[in-house]
Length: 336
Length: 141
Image 1 (spheres, rainbow over the protein chains, first blue to last red):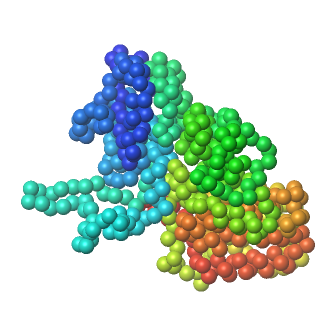
Image 2: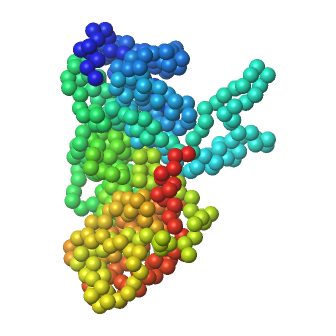
Image 3: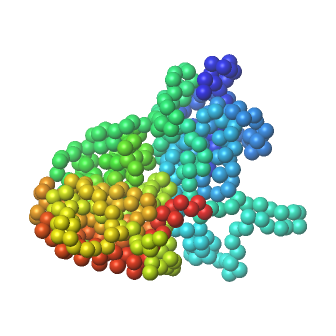
Protein backbone atom coordinates (compact mmCIF):
# COMPACT_ATOMS: atom_id res chain seq x y z
CA UNK A 1 0.00 0.00 0.00
CA UNK A 2 2.87 2.40 0.68
CA UNK A 3 3.60 2.88 -2.96
CA UNK A 4 5.05 6.31 -2.46
CA UNK A 5 7.53 5.27 0.20
CA UNK A 6 8.95 2.14 -1.42
CA UNK A 7 9.22 3.60 -4.82
CA UNK A 8 10.63 7.05 -5.40
CA UNK A 9 9.22 7.25 -8.89
CA UNK A 10 5.83 8.77 -9.65
CA UNK A 11 2.58 7.05 -8.80
CA UNK A 12 1.10 4.98 -11.59
CA UNK A 13 -2.54 5.73 -12.17
CA UNK A 14 -5.03 3.91 -14.39
CA UNK A 15 -8.61 4.84 -15.19
CA UNK A 16 -10.91 2.37 -16.87
CA UNK A 17 -14.54 2.36 -17.91
CA UNK A 18 -16.83 -0.64 -17.89
CA UNK A 19 -20.50 -0.17 -18.72
CA UNK A 20 -20.38 3.59 -18.29
CA UNK A 21 -21.50 6.78 -19.98
CA UNK A 22 -18.10 8.46 -19.90
CA UNK A 23 -19.20 10.99 -17.31
CA UNK A 24 -16.85 9.58 -14.66
CA UNK A 25 -13.85 9.98 -16.96
CA UNK A 26 -14.95 13.53 -17.68
CA UNK A 27 -15.28 14.18 -13.93
CA UNK A 28 -11.54 13.53 -13.68
CA UNK A 29 -10.96 16.24 -16.26
CA UNK A 30 -13.30 18.50 -14.28
CA UNK A 31 -10.53 19.09 -11.77
CA UNK A 32 -9.47 21.69 -14.35
CA UNK A 33 -5.99 23.13 -13.73
CA UNK A 34 -5.45 20.68 -10.86
CA UNK A 35 -4.96 18.08 -13.56
CA UNK A 36 -1.41 19.44 -13.72
CA UNK A 37 -0.99 18.55 -10.03
CA UNK A 38 -2.25 15.04 -10.77
CA UNK A 39 0.06 14.62 -13.72
CA UNK A 40 2.95 16.01 -11.66
CA UNK A 41 2.39 13.37 -8.99
CA UNK A 42 1.26 10.47 -11.14
CA UNK A 43 1.81 8.89 -14.51
CA UNK A 44 -1.34 7.86 -16.28
CA UNK A 45 -0.50 4.41 -17.58
CA UNK A 46 -3.91 3.39 -18.89
CA UNK A 47 -6.95 5.51 -19.69
CA UNK A 48 -8.92 4.45 -22.76
CA UNK A 49 -10.83 7.73 -23.10
CA UNK A 50 -7.61 9.74 -23.40
CA UNK A 51 -4.64 7.45 -24.10
CA UNK A 52 -3.97 4.88 -26.76
CA UNK A 53 -2.78 2.13 -24.40
CA UNK A 54 -4.02 -1.28 -25.52
CA UNK A 55 -5.35 -4.11 -23.39
CA UNK A 56 -2.28 -6.14 -24.31
CA UNK A 57 -0.07 -3.42 -22.82
CA UNK A 58 -1.94 -3.84 -19.54
CA UNK A 59 -1.59 -7.62 -19.81
CA UNK A 60 2.17 -7.17 -20.22
CA UNK A 61 2.49 -5.22 -16.97
CA UNK A 62 3.78 -6.95 -13.87
CA UNK A 63 1.30 -7.71 -11.13
CA UNK A 64 0.76 -4.73 -8.81
CA UNK A 65 2.45 -2.49 -11.38
CA UNK A 66 -0.32 0.12 -11.19
CA UNK A 67 -0.62 1.94 -7.87
CA UNK A 68 -4.23 3.07 -8.19
CA UNK A 69 -6.91 2.09 -10.65
CA UNK A 70 -10.13 4.06 -10.77
CA UNK A 71 -12.65 1.66 -12.28
CA UNK A 72 -15.85 3.35 -13.36
CA UNK A 73 -18.87 1.73 -14.93
CA UNK A 74 -20.76 -1.45 -14.13
CA UNK A 75 -19.89 -4.94 -15.30
CA UNK A 76 -22.29 -5.72 -18.11
CA UNK A 77 -20.41 -8.10 -20.40
CA UNK A 78 -17.45 -10.47 -20.54
CA UNK A 79 -15.08 -7.69 -21.65
CA UNK A 80 -15.91 -5.60 -18.57
CA UNK A 81 -15.43 -8.66 -16.37
CA UNK A 82 -12.11 -9.59 -17.96
CA UNK A 83 -10.82 -6.06 -17.46
CA UNK A 84 -12.03 -6.01 -13.85
CA UNK A 85 -10.03 -9.16 -13.08
CA UNK A 86 -7.04 -7.97 -15.06
CA UNK A 87 -6.90 -4.56 -13.43
CA UNK A 88 -7.34 -6.14 -10.00
CA UNK A 89 -4.29 -8.28 -10.69
CA UNK A 90 -2.20 -5.38 -11.96
CA UNK A 91 -3.21 -2.81 -9.32
CA UNK A 92 -2.21 -2.29 -5.73
CA UNK A 93 -5.39 -0.32 -5.04
CA UNK A 94 -8.58 -0.87 -6.99
CA UNK A 95 -11.18 1.84 -6.52
CA UNK A 96 -14.81 1.48 -7.60
CA UNK A 97 -15.27 4.99 -8.95
CA UNK A 98 -18.78 6.35 -9.43
CA UNK A 99 -22.26 4.92 -8.87
CA UNK A 100 -22.06 2.26 -11.59
CA UNK A 101 -18.96 0.57 -10.21
CA UNK A 102 -20.15 1.16 -6.65
CA UNK A 103 -23.79 -0.03 -6.88
CA UNK A 104 -24.52 -0.88 -10.50
CA UNK A 105 -25.74 2.57 -11.42
CA UNK A 106 -28.05 3.51 -14.25
CA UNK A 107 -27.00 0.49 -16.40
CA UNK A 108 -28.16 -1.60 -13.44
CA UNK A 109 -31.77 -0.60 -14.16
CA UNK A 110 -31.54 -3.13 -16.99
CA UNK A 111 -31.76 -5.83 -14.30
CA UNK A 112 -35.49 -5.07 -14.15
CA UNK A 113 -35.64 -6.86 -17.51
CA UNK A 114 -33.80 -9.96 -18.67
CA UNK A 115 -31.38 -10.33 -21.55
CA UNK A 116 -34.00 -11.72 -23.90
CA UNK A 117 -36.35 -8.80 -23.34
CA UNK A 118 -33.53 -6.31 -23.81
CA UNK A 119 -32.37 -7.90 -27.06
CA UNK A 120 -35.90 -8.11 -28.41
CA UNK A 121 -36.53 -4.47 -27.59
CA UNK A 122 -33.26 -3.21 -29.02
CA UNK A 123 -32.81 -5.44 -32.06
CA UNK A 124 -36.42 -6.19 -33.04
CA UNK A 125 -39.08 -3.96 -31.54
CA UNK A 126 -37.59 -0.50 -31.35
CA UNK A 127 -39.45 1.90 -33.60
CA UNK A 128 -36.43 2.74 -35.72
CA UNK A 129 -35.22 -0.84 -36.20
CA UNK A 130 -35.78 -2.92 -39.30
CA UNK A 131 -34.45 -6.40 -38.71
CA UNK A 132 -36.66 -8.79 -40.66
CA UNK A 133 -33.94 -11.44 -40.63
CA UNK A 134 -33.89 -11.29 -36.83
CA UNK A 135 -30.16 -10.88 -36.56
CA UNK A 136 -28.76 -10.64 -33.05
CA UNK A 137 -25.16 -9.92 -32.04
CA UNK A 138 -23.07 -13.07 -31.87
CA UNK A 139 -19.98 -13.62 -29.76
CA UNK A 140 -18.29 -15.21 -32.78
CA UNK A 141 -18.90 -14.50 -36.45
CA UNK A 142 -17.03 -16.12 -39.29
CA UNK A 143 -16.03 -13.88 -42.16
CA UNK A 144 -13.62 -14.64 -44.92
CA UNK A 145 -10.81 -12.84 -43.11
CA UNK A 146 -11.26 -14.99 -40.04
CA UNK A 147 -13.41 -15.01 -36.91
CA UNK A 148 -14.77 -11.78 -35.47
CA UNK A 149 -15.44 -11.70 -31.75
CA UNK A 150 -17.75 -9.64 -29.58
CA UNK A 151 -17.94 -9.73 -25.79
CA UNK A 152 -20.69 -11.86 -24.30
CA UNK A 153 -23.62 -9.79 -23.03
CA UNK A 154 -24.60 -11.00 -19.57
CA UNK A 155 -28.11 -11.34 -18.21
CA UNK A 156 -27.17 -9.59 -14.94
CA UNK A 157 -25.51 -6.22 -14.58
CA UNK A 158 -23.01 -6.39 -11.71
CA UNK A 159 -21.40 -3.86 -9.46
CA UNK A 160 -17.60 -4.10 -9.40
CA UNK A 161 -17.44 -5.80 -6.00
CA UNK A 162 -19.72 -8.56 -7.28
CA UNK A 163 -16.97 -9.52 -9.69
CA UNK A 164 -13.70 -8.84 -7.94
CA UNK A 165 -12.15 -7.60 -4.72
CA UNK A 166 -12.48 -3.83 -4.31
CA UNK A 167 -10.36 -1.70 -1.95
CA UNK A 168 -12.30 1.56 -1.88
CA UNK A 169 -15.45 3.12 -3.21
CA UNK A 170 -15.85 6.67 -4.39
CA UNK A 171 -19.57 7.18 -5.01
CA UNK A 172 -21.39 9.67 -7.19
CA UNK A 173 -22.84 10.08 -10.63
CA UNK A 174 -20.26 11.34 -11.26
CA UNK A 175 -18.16 11.79 -8.11
CA UNK A 176 -17.53 15.45 -7.42
CA UNK A 177 -14.13 16.60 -8.57
CA UNK A 178 -13.43 18.18 -5.19
CA UNK A 179 -13.81 14.83 -3.44
CA UNK A 180 -11.58 13.15 -6.01
CA UNK A 181 -8.90 15.77 -5.45
CA UNK A 182 -9.13 15.32 -1.67
CA UNK A 183 -8.72 11.56 -2.00
CA UNK A 184 -5.92 11.88 -4.50
CA UNK A 185 -4.06 14.45 -2.42
CA UNK A 186 -4.38 12.20 0.63
CA UNK A 187 -2.86 9.26 -1.25
CA UNK A 188 -0.04 11.32 -2.75
CA UNK A 189 0.86 12.93 0.58
CA UNK A 190 1.19 9.44 2.02
CA UNK A 191 -1.38 9.95 4.75
CA UNK A 192 -2.85 6.80 6.23
CA UNK A 193 -5.54 5.22 4.10
CA UNK A 194 -8.91 4.30 5.60
CA UNK A 195 -9.67 0.60 6.18
CA UNK A 196 -10.24 -1.53 3.13
CA UNK A 197 -13.82 -1.48 1.88
CA UNK A 198 -14.43 2.11 2.98
CA UNK A 199 -16.57 4.48 1.00
CA UNK A 200 -14.32 7.49 0.64
CA UNK A 201 -15.00 10.99 -0.53
CA UNK A 202 -18.42 10.89 1.15
CA UNK A 203 -19.87 11.31 4.61
CA UNK A 204 -21.60 8.94 7.03
CA UNK A 205 -24.71 11.04 7.58
CA UNK A 206 -27.69 11.35 5.25
CA UNK A 207 -28.05 14.15 2.75
CA UNK A 208 -30.99 15.67 4.65
CA UNK A 209 -28.57 16.61 7.44
CA UNK A 210 -26.69 18.82 5.00
CA UNK A 211 -29.54 20.08 2.87
CA UNK A 212 -30.46 23.70 3.53
CA UNK A 213 -34.07 23.51 2.41
CA UNK A 214 -36.68 24.27 5.06
CA UNK A 215 -37.92 21.13 6.75
CA UNK A 216 -40.72 20.74 9.26
CA UNK A 217 -41.57 17.63 11.27
CA UNK A 218 -44.82 17.39 9.42
CA UNK A 219 -44.22 15.56 6.21
CA UNK A 220 -47.76 15.24 4.90
CA UNK A 221 -48.26 14.12 1.37
CA UNK A 222 -51.67 13.60 -0.19
CA UNK A 223 -50.38 12.90 -3.68
CA UNK A 224 -46.92 12.26 -5.06
CA UNK A 225 -46.03 14.44 -7.98
CA UNK A 226 -43.57 14.33 -10.84
CA UNK A 227 -41.12 17.25 -10.96
CA UNK A 228 -42.91 18.88 -13.90
CA UNK A 229 -46.16 19.01 -11.95
CA UNK A 230 -44.76 21.27 -9.24
CA UNK A 231 -43.74 24.88 -9.27
CA UNK A 232 -40.92 24.59 -6.78
CA UNK A 233 -40.78 27.43 -4.26
CA UNK A 234 -37.00 26.99 -4.10
CA UNK A 235 -36.81 26.65 -0.35
CA UNK A 236 -39.15 23.97 1.05
CA UNK A 237 -38.13 20.32 1.42
CA UNK A 238 -38.99 18.45 -1.78
CA UNK A 239 -40.78 15.65 0.04
CA UNK A 240 -43.01 18.19 1.76
CA UNK A 241 -43.88 19.50 -1.70
CA UNK A 242 -44.92 16.00 -2.77
CA UNK A 243 -41.81 15.16 -4.76
CA UNK A 244 -39.81 12.02 -4.16
CA UNK A 245 -36.34 12.98 -3.01
CA UNK A 246 -33.89 10.25 -2.00
CA UNK A 247 -32.10 12.48 0.51
CA UNK A 248 -33.21 10.59 3.66
CA UNK A 249 -31.47 7.37 2.59
CA UNK A 250 -28.49 8.81 0.71
CA UNK A 251 -25.02 9.74 1.91
CA UNK A 252 -24.06 13.35 2.11
CA UNK A 253 -20.81 14.51 0.57
CA UNK A 254 -21.93 15.50 -2.89
CA UNK A 255 -22.41 19.10 -1.80
CA UNK A 256 -26.12 18.64 -2.68
CA UNK A 257 -25.52 19.81 -6.19
CA UNK A 258 -28.89 18.58 -7.45
CA UNK A 259 -30.80 20.22 -4.62
CA UNK A 260 -28.99 23.50 -5.29
CA UNK A 261 -30.06 23.13 -8.89
CA UNK A 262 -33.67 22.68 -7.68
CA UNK A 263 -33.83 18.98 -8.50
CA UNK A 264 -34.60 16.28 -5.93
CA UNK A 265 -31.88 13.81 -4.93
CA UNK A 266 -31.60 10.66 -7.06
CA UNK A 267 -29.46 8.78 -4.57
CA UNK A 268 -26.23 8.59 -6.56
CA UNK A 269 -23.99 8.72 -3.47
CA UNK A 270 -25.50 5.47 -2.27
CA UNK A 271 -26.91 4.45 1.09
CA UNK A 272 -25.53 5.51 4.47
CA UNK A 273 -23.39 2.80 6.15
CA UNK A 274 -26.16 1.25 8.27
CA UNK A 275 -28.53 0.64 5.35
CA UNK A 276 -28.78 -2.89 3.95
CA UNK A 277 -31.07 -2.14 1.05
CA UNK A 278 -31.13 1.47 -0.18
CA UNK A 279 -34.53 1.42 -1.85
CA UNK A 280 -36.24 -0.39 1.01
CA UNK A 281 -35.07 2.27 3.42
CA UNK A 282 -36.36 4.95 1.12
CA UNK A 283 -39.73 3.22 0.68
CA UNK A 284 -39.98 3.12 4.44
CA UNK A 285 -39.34 6.86 4.68
CA UNK A 286 -41.68 7.80 1.85
CA UNK A 287 -44.51 5.66 3.21
CA UNK A 288 -44.23 7.48 6.52
CA UNK A 289 -44.82 10.79 4.77
CA UNK A 290 -48.19 9.68 3.40
CA UNK A 291 -50.87 11.73 5.09
CA UNK A 292 -53.72 9.25 5.39
CA UNK A 293 -54.93 6.46 7.62
CA UNK A 294 -57.69 5.34 5.31
CA UNK A 295 -56.79 2.12 3.47
CA UNK A 296 -58.42 3.15 0.18
CA UNK A 297 -56.90 6.60 0.20
CA UNK A 298 -53.48 5.13 1.03
CA UNK A 299 -53.74 2.89 -2.02
CA UNK A 300 -54.69 5.89 -4.14
CA UNK A 301 -51.70 7.90 -2.90
CA UNK A 302 -49.33 4.99 -3.49
CA UNK A 303 -50.79 4.69 -6.95
CA UNK A 304 -49.42 8.17 -7.63
CA UNK A 305 -45.87 6.84 -7.18
CA UNK A 306 -44.81 5.87 -10.66
CA UNK A 307 -42.26 3.09 -10.98
CA UNK A 308 -41.13 2.43 -7.37
CA UNK A 309 -38.35 0.07 -8.46
CA UNK A 310 -36.84 2.60 -10.86
CA UNK A 311 -37.33 5.51 -8.49
CA UNK A 312 -36.13 4.13 -5.17
CA UNK A 313 -33.37 2.03 -6.72
CA UNK A 314 -32.37 4.53 -9.40
CA UNK A 315 -28.67 3.70 -9.15
CA UNK A 316 -28.70 0.63 -6.93
CA UNK A 317 -30.69 -2.21 -8.48
CA UNK A 318 -27.71 -4.63 -8.70
CA UNK A 319 -26.74 -3.89 -5.09
CA UNK A 320 -30.27 -4.41 -3.74
CA UNK A 321 -31.61 -7.48 -1.94
CA UNK A 322 -33.77 -8.13 -5.02
CA UNK A 323 -31.03 -7.40 -7.49
CA UNK A 324 -32.83 -8.57 -10.60
CA UNK A 325 -36.10 -9.62 -12.09
CA UNK A 326 -37.77 -12.71 -10.67
CA UNK A 327 -39.58 -14.97 -13.10
CA UNK A 328 -42.43 -16.62 -11.26
CA UNK A 329 -45.17 -17.15 -13.80
CA UNK A 330 -44.00 -20.36 -15.53
CA UNK A 331 -44.58 -22.20 -12.32
CA UNK A 332 -41.89 -24.52 -11.32
CA UNK A 333 -41.76 -26.72 -8.23
CA UNK A 334 -45.35 -27.05 -7.06
CA UNK A 335 -45.72 -27.80 -3.41
CA UNK A 336 -47.95 -30.78 -2.81
CA UNK B 1 -38.26 -33.73 4.17
CA UNK B 2 -40.97 -31.17 4.61
CA UNK B 3 -42.67 -29.89 1.52
CA UNK B 4 -44.48 -27.22 3.45
CA UNK B 5 -43.73 -23.64 2.46
CA UNK B 6 -41.60 -21.57 4.80
CA UNK B 7 -43.50 -18.65 6.24
CA UNK B 8 -41.95 -15.87 8.26
CA UNK B 9 -44.36 -13.91 10.43
CA UNK B 10 -43.62 -10.55 12.01
CA UNK B 11 -45.98 -10.00 14.94
CA UNK B 12 -46.33 -6.89 17.01
CA UNK B 13 -45.68 -7.32 20.70
CA UNK B 14 -48.86 -5.76 22.04
CA UNK B 15 -51.68 -7.34 20.06
CA UNK B 16 -50.69 -9.94 17.49
CA UNK B 17 -47.99 -11.77 19.42
CA UNK B 18 -50.30 -11.92 22.42
CA UNK B 19 -53.01 -13.20 20.07
CA UNK B 20 -50.68 -15.92 18.79
CA UNK B 21 -49.78 -16.72 22.38
CA UNK B 22 -53.47 -17.10 23.17
CA UNK B 23 -53.80 -19.59 20.31
CA UNK B 24 -50.98 -21.51 21.93
CA UNK B 25 -52.23 -21.43 25.50
CA UNK B 26 -55.69 -22.40 24.24
CA UNK B 27 -54.02 -25.41 22.59
CA UNK B 28 -55.32 -24.58 19.14
CA UNK B 29 -53.64 -26.47 16.34
CA UNK B 30 -52.34 -24.63 13.33
CA UNK B 31 -49.71 -25.21 10.67
CA UNK B 32 -46.23 -25.45 12.09
CA UNK B 33 -44.42 -24.07 9.05
CA UNK B 34 -44.54 -20.55 10.41
CA UNK B 35 -41.56 -18.82 12.01
CA UNK B 36 -42.69 -16.06 14.31
CA UNK B 37 -40.55 -13.00 14.95
CA UNK B 38 -41.75 -10.65 17.64
CA UNK B 39 -41.24 -6.95 17.08
CA UNK B 40 -42.37 -4.13 19.32
CA UNK B 41 -44.72 -2.62 16.74
CA UNK B 42 -45.82 -3.36 13.19
CA UNK B 43 -44.51 0.14 12.46
CA UNK B 44 -41.03 -1.25 13.10
CA UNK B 45 -41.29 -3.69 10.20
CA UNK B 46 -39.38 -2.02 7.42
CA UNK B 47 -39.49 -3.27 3.84
CA UNK B 48 -35.89 -4.45 4.39
CA UNK B 49 -37.11 -7.11 6.88
CA UNK B 50 -39.53 -8.54 4.37
CA UNK B 51 -37.14 -8.49 1.41
CA UNK B 52 -34.42 -10.07 3.55
CA UNK B 53 -36.79 -12.86 4.61
CA UNK B 54 -37.41 -13.71 0.95
CA UNK B 55 -33.71 -13.52 0.17
CA UNK B 56 -33.04 -16.01 2.96
CA UNK B 57 -35.56 -18.42 1.50
CA UNK B 58 -39.02 -17.58 2.83
CA UNK B 59 -41.95 -18.46 0.58
CA UNK B 60 -44.34 -16.06 2.26
CA UNK B 61 -44.23 -13.24 4.79
CA UNK B 62 -47.07 -12.54 7.16
CA UNK B 63 -47.24 -9.23 8.98
CA UNK B 64 -49.66 -8.76 11.86
CA UNK B 65 -50.37 -5.65 13.90
CA UNK B 66 -53.03 -4.17 16.15
CA UNK B 67 -56.37 -3.26 14.62
CA UNK B 68 -56.61 0.28 13.22
CA UNK B 69 -57.03 2.72 16.06
CA UNK B 70 -55.62 0.25 18.62
CA UNK B 71 -51.89 0.72 18.09
CA UNK B 72 -49.97 0.92 21.34
CA UNK B 73 -47.92 3.70 19.75
CA UNK B 74 -50.95 5.43 18.20
CA UNK B 75 -50.22 4.98 14.52
CA UNK B 76 -47.46 2.45 13.94
CA UNK B 77 -49.92 0.12 12.26
CA UNK B 78 -50.94 2.80 9.77
CA UNK B 79 -47.31 3.31 8.84
CA UNK B 80 -47.07 -0.43 8.39
CA UNK B 81 -50.12 -0.41 6.14
CA UNK B 82 -48.61 2.29 3.91
CA UNK B 83 -45.27 0.49 3.67
CA UNK B 84 -47.04 -2.77 2.95
CA UNK B 85 -48.90 -1.38 -0.08
CA UNK B 86 -45.80 0.31 -1.44
CA UNK B 87 -43.77 -2.86 -0.96
CA UNK B 88 -46.41 -4.93 -2.76
CA UNK B 89 -46.24 -2.55 -5.69
CA UNK B 90 -42.46 -2.82 -5.75
CA UNK B 91 -42.25 -6.62 -5.61
CA UNK B 92 -44.88 -6.94 -8.36
CA UNK B 93 -42.66 -4.82 -10.57
CA UNK B 94 -39.84 -7.31 -10.06
CA UNK B 95 -42.07 -10.21 -11.00
CA UNK B 96 -42.85 -11.63 -7.57
CA UNK B 97 -46.43 -12.57 -6.71
CA UNK B 98 -47.56 -9.82 -4.35
CA UNK B 99 -49.82 -12.23 -2.45
CA UNK B 100 -46.69 -13.73 -0.92
CA UNK B 101 -46.81 -10.78 1.47
CA UNK B 102 -49.88 -10.43 3.63
CA UNK B 103 -50.87 -7.92 6.28
CA UNK B 104 -53.63 -8.69 8.79
CA UNK B 105 -54.78 -7.15 12.03
CA UNK B 106 -54.88 -9.54 15.01
CA UNK B 107 -55.86 -8.37 18.47
CA UNK B 108 -54.72 -9.92 21.74
CA UNK B 109 -58.00 -11.80 22.06
CA UNK B 110 -58.05 -13.22 18.52
CA UNK B 111 -56.21 -16.49 19.06
CA UNK B 112 -58.67 -18.41 16.95
CA UNK B 113 -58.48 -15.89 14.12
CA UNK B 114 -54.69 -16.12 14.22
CA UNK B 115 -54.72 -19.91 13.92
CA UNK B 116 -57.15 -19.70 10.99
CA UNK B 117 -55.11 -16.98 9.33
CA UNK B 118 -51.93 -19.05 9.50
CA UNK B 119 -53.70 -22.04 7.92
CA UNK B 120 -55.29 -19.90 5.22
CA UNK B 121 -52.11 -18.11 4.35
CA UNK B 122 -50.13 -21.33 4.36
CA UNK B 123 -52.59 -22.86 1.90
CA UNK B 124 -52.45 -19.77 -0.28
CA UNK B 125 -48.65 -19.98 -0.43
CA UNK B 126 -48.85 -23.68 -1.27
CA UNK B 127 -51.09 -22.70 -4.16
CA UNK B 128 -48.64 -20.06 -5.41
CA UNK B 129 -45.70 -22.44 -5.06
CA UNK B 130 -42.17 -22.26 -3.74
CA UNK B 131 -40.54 -18.86 -3.97
CA UNK B 132 -37.80 -18.49 -6.55
CA UNK B 133 -36.30 -15.38 -5.01
CA UNK B 134 -33.38 -16.96 -3.19
CA UNK B 135 -32.38 -19.17 -6.10
CA UNK B 136 -32.70 -16.33 -8.61
CA UNK B 137 -30.54 -14.00 -6.54
CA UNK B 138 -27.86 -16.64 -6.01
CA UNK B 139 -27.54 -17.33 -9.73
CA UNK B 140 -25.18 -15.20 -11.79
CA UNK B 141 -26.10 -15.41 -15.43
